Length: 420
Image 1 (cartoon, rainbow, N blue to C red):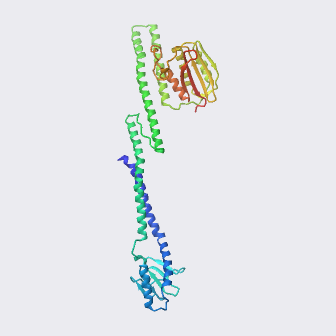
Image 2 (cartoon, helix red, strand yellow):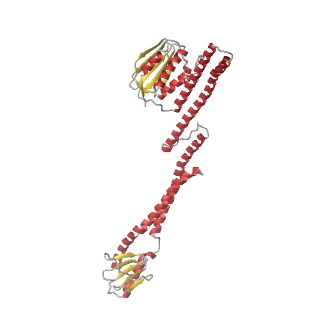
Image 3 (cartoon, one colour):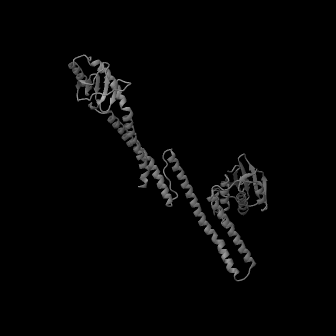
């Protein structure tokens, strides 16, 4: 029942508007326009009466014959009165004696008495067109307007129903998505606002489905990865209960630090997913951040220059750190970092001399918890490059992985200089 409300409201609005047009049109015609054609006809009748009727001195029988002929021709009751308003001749039903005419004219229209005309010789001519056979102008007008209203009403229904049917499809899509099917898509028809709304709905549905799927995969992988350090911590605590052991205590502290780092990366990824517009209003010296992070690694060189950009220094530091850690963990020294700029972007490249990444896996390494073939036993959880891509995207940039100029892996990061 709810789905029928909208199109019924639109359709009933059109029908009511048409009915009001008919009523107001007929009322306006009755109040203002009905007398105009009557007055035009009265002018013709006046001239015809002057030419047809005999002079006032003519015998009454002759005036009666003339009135009868004129009444038969016009098809209406007619009466002729002398200057004292005494009836001389008549045709049809009895008409009352005329009253005074308007001071500024020689004729008038009266609803009860009909047409009244004072002839130049002082006689009075009266006629009643209300009893003429045939259709009435008001009835004709009402029939015409009603026919137009009916035609418009019948013709408008398919268009209104087509419009609301598309809205019902959108409503069904929203209800389906609300029931948990986030991959719902609706048909896009036309090029109007409803089509644009359907397109936006499909885009939003696809983004939500992607986001929910990524979160589900992140949750599943995180729960799996968290078991290993938690198991080691539990075992270490149980072993410490038997007595102090500095080596075990140190290993336990490393497991806790590893677990803390993993949780920090998971929370950062979730925060970047949830916040599409982080605060990027600070001025960041990317060259200085790169120099500070390169200082933590041996055989790591930095070259080039770049102007400060707008962004989040904490996120950009994490981007550089993850790239360097990934290069040292999965590649081989030396690691070369280079910075240069274009009018719109700052380019950051990190090159290592390790075994490289196969072409088929270069896009997959950006997925959370993904490990390249043959690297399952290497320390780490596979979140570093996923965070790099998220941070670069948040700064209006992108990340691409390719082969290094002399082997190894080249990570190519583009960052917008004018991040809003």
